[in-house]
Length: 419
Image (cartoon, rainbow, N blue to C red; front, side):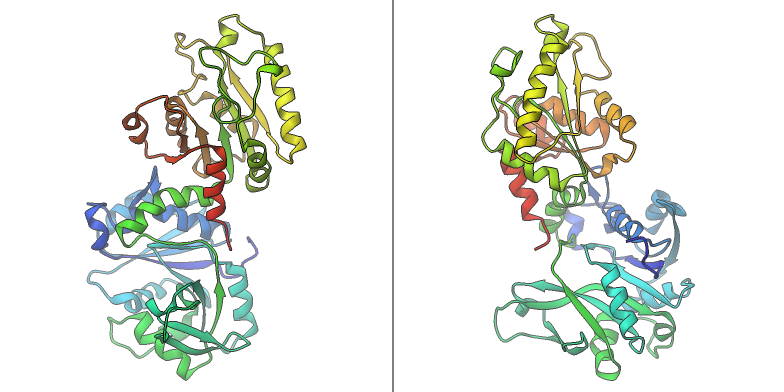
């Protein structure tokens, strides 16, 4: 979506995060860790992918930590800071940050929510209604009575805002992502401290044409511990583009105390072939990374292993799946190899062969502690299939997502899809 004409964004990242403080201490809420990196990086990745080139971070509480982490750039985007010495409310924060906006319009979003809105669609809506000072995204929910409903006319004009529904039913609510015309916001006659939602948005639709569009994609708010804990695994899964898989115990049944040395000994685990067909459409690249020290022990050869893999790949292709590359380490466990898992060498081989691979957008699925450690060592999010190989405490110290098998993992991925 690099052709988005609106190139600037304001991210409201100055909240205290009071409710989240019981699980995330001594850091501002936007820096709450999601696996190995701050929550805010996921928002900035989305903005970068959409073609945004300049971001103003509206900051307050412990803002120096945010500045230390990001500095003045992130993924080729310029980063600026609008610092609140005292809390100004969401409206005051937006208006203060507007002082640094250069363009005629700017995106505004909350720094504690991830809402995967199609920015291009909102841009098109704004272009169809140049008389409107703002357009914004609505979020489809199953129960509007908890939030208050926003109702639209057939052209997307807001007809009513934040009215409590008469009962539990589906509808659309404010999603907290806005495209605002700069001069209009700068010209509002309001005190220094005010709420954008209550003092601007809930009033503006009565006085001027305001438009919105409803979306039903992935949404997560880290404002409360329960949702933050969900975000810690949902966000890495939802944003992932590259997949690393162990072989034995993930794709095929393990041979206790032995090795798969020929095609006749290779047995797909239940549900794997159907899963591979889904994964082929879900990920840009899929790799197998497998320790095969049986070669190092002289129990079988690379030629034997190639025959096994040719048969495996043929069956996967017939079911609509694919594997882009298989990486194998034949080194013995006693050698201290840079490539044998848990060392991350095979991940870096994949990065060399496929430079587009981004470990921060990758998953590693395995059934052993060494797989989870391999993922951690490469900066890849780990998914642990319960192979009963290591104690739970050893595995859980790395905070993986735990699934029963590959089919269960696929079910989790599907649950996060845009409906």
